[in-house]
Image (cartoon, rainbow, N blue to C red):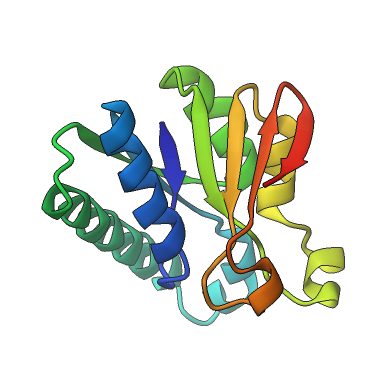
Length: 160
């Protein structure tokens, strides 16, 4: 099982649910983050170390998540760090190379403009992953959707 996390703390709900699921299923939990260097291209002209600092922060974040998993009782965990397009790295590299059978990701709560311009990593993973995908909505979003999980299995999406 793979859980995708970010460095901004927005992944805690997803991560906690993944830990609970991995414990109940006695599954190995892969904890992954992918740093996309594209957003830093312009800044990099002024600060050549920005991507390196971002990568170091991502490594530190992975270690914190792994410690949190161990504190929750998981003994079989592995961290994965990649650089590149998150949806491509996850669906075309991590899932097949680590024999992932389930991906758990957080729902993208960006505004409409962000979703149109940048697209949603979660949406791309749901559409492209060769395995089942569970999308977890954060507890901070609106009350109606607070407890929803969106599960994609066999290319069908179900709302639970």
